[in-house]
Each structure stands twice: as structure tokens, then as C-alpha cells.
Image (cartoon, rainbow, N blue to C red; front, side, top):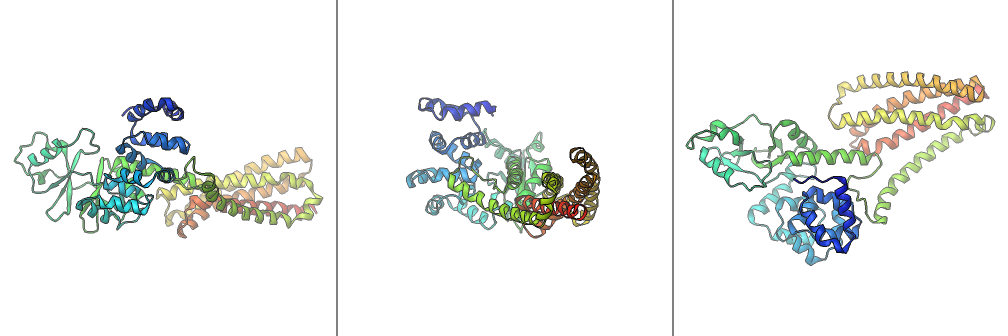
Length: 448
């Protein structure tokens, strides 16, 4: 694999704008791995992306598409006519077709299916019995399969047929005559063994297996932790569906982490950097609208204390401090809990422990920073009552924010709602409303 620094990618993107660099650009792209080509293409505006992608070979075009975000490849498909799309999928591999089928126009998908042989059609039908979040959907069929009645010479013969660029093929997948999985046979175990020796005694039947119905994140995590370069994917009857390789597993883990990061801003992980303006605006408008409703709720809370603010202007000056401190404290807890939920580290047995721990952390930090803010407020306004009011409000809001950071994501997960997508919006509303209510309520009580 050729190493490419970010500067190399930047140069490729710049060269994509220069018609005189077309031939050289194609040569440079030939040196890149498919995922690097996809990364470079996604860094280009739509016009340059298409013209650069068209310089690739048919195989590279398909491989790079499978590594691109959904939005990015949809935007390429939209710019191709029917003849170009048919040429693209004419010889497509069934595994690549499964990856792209949701974005391909229906008539092109049907055309691609008509080009598959009987075995590939069976694989496709098998994959479509699983949904988009299950391992069985993406089981790789590029596997070396051996009968458990075979001899060492049969296993060696399979390995010798491997192409030079074959990946994650250190082991054979052994099945019985009905297609049921028996175990793995590592190539290293064949060294020095007589050709006539049955392979059944060399099988590693302790290797973990991935179930087709298993969540893709769970299966990917299993492969990443297994120590094997690939694990078998089995159906409910223990028949071999294919494999999940370490390369695919790590790519799934990366996508999952990126998804969590994007969801914190109300965006999907498939968002294209150069998506059309209207498309991007529509996607972001929803969460802006939701945020507007929460902002009105906070504003309504402030409006309840309009008389207090008119008489004690200092409270209006200090209000953002209360909301900000609560928001930051809550976000820290929220991020920690969402990570724990994603990694499966949080269970019903640990909820109460986390609840008490975060309450203690919130109270401790609340008291510490309440004293700092109270001292600063007294030096600023020379009024110890205002200083005491903001100190009490800070303690209340940071403590409530810490508790909310635990309760909100746990509740959202039980409600089958992604905590990373909506947790921060709800948390901001809670800390704003509680912070303003506590601060202005205490101000009305002690200052008027």
C-alpha cells in the first residue's frame, strides 16, 4: 500500500481542477487504495468529483463508491445517464451490489441482478433476508471453503490458487457435507504435515463465530477483539453465510464512531461535504426548528421574571453564566454516558452507581465554582446577596445537569431513540430552563 499524506490528497484535489493534469491525475489515483480514492473524491466539489471519478477504471469506480458516504455516491449516480450506470454495474460483484443497491435507481438494480449468475443470485437473496444493521447483510463471500473430509493436500491446493492481492485469507472455513460450519483451518497448521493427513484433526473449533442476525456493530467489535483476521458468519442453522474480515470490521467501527460524532450536531454520518444547498438546508432545518422550540421555552421562563429583571439589571448580566456552566457540566456527563452505552459498559445494575457518582461530581464542582463565581460577582457588583443568589443557582444547575446527563441518554435508549442524536438538545433545554428558573427565582425571593 502506498502511503499518502494529507498534502498528497490536497494536491490531487487541486489537480482535479486542471484539465492539463487529467492524465497525470489518473496515474496518481492508480497508486491509491480504494478508501483513499474515496476520501480524495469526497474532498472535491461535485463537478470535479465526477470528472475525476470518470478517469478511474471500472473496478476502481465501483470499489471507491463502496467506501464513499451514501450522499457522496448518490450525488455521483444522479449525474450519470442510464448507459453509464449500466456499464458501471454490468460486471459488478454481488458483495459490491449489496453495498450499493439502496442508492442505485431501481431499473439499474434490476439490470445488475439480471447479470448475476445463479450462485450470486442466491447470495443476494440470502443477504436481503437481513436488514441494513445486521451482519448477515454484509457477509463477504470471498472465502476459501473446505470439506471436513478433505486432506492436507486439498487445503494446500486451495491456498496455492490465491491471487497475490488476496486479503485476510490466512485460514480456510471448514464445513460438513450439508454446509454447516465446523471450524477454521489456519494455513500455518499445514506446515510440515503429510499430504494424506485428514484436516479434521487440525481444525480450530474454538474460534468465535458471528451470527447473521447479530447487530453489525456488535459483530464488528467481536472480530476486532478476536485476534483473527476474519470470522465466519453463520445463519440460524449454523450454515456458512460468508465471513466478516478485520478490515470490514474496523471500517464499520470507524463509521459508527463518526455517526455518533455527527449525531451530536443533529447530522447523519452520510452527510456529503459538498451536497447541494437545498438538500443540506432541508436536513439541518429540522433540528434548527426543534432548537427554536426549546429556545422559546427558555425565553418563556425568563419572561416569568420580567419584573425582577427590570429592577435588578445585574441578574440579566449574570444569567448567561448560570446557563453556560450547567450546559458544560451536563455535556461532560452526557458524552461519558453515551460512550458507555455505545460500548455496552452500562447496565441496569450500574445505573444507580452512576447516578450517585455523577451527583457527587456535580455537587463538588458546583460548590467549587459557585464560590469562585460568587467572589467575582461580589467584586464586580459589590452586593453579597447577588453573589449568594448566583452561587446557589450554580450549585443547583450543575447538580441537575450532571443528573440529566445520566438520565436523559439512558431514557432515550430505552425509548429506542439515539441518545447521540437528541440527547444534547434535551440537555440544553433542561439546563437553560432549570438554570434561569433557579437564578431568577432566587433573585426574586431575596432581592425584591
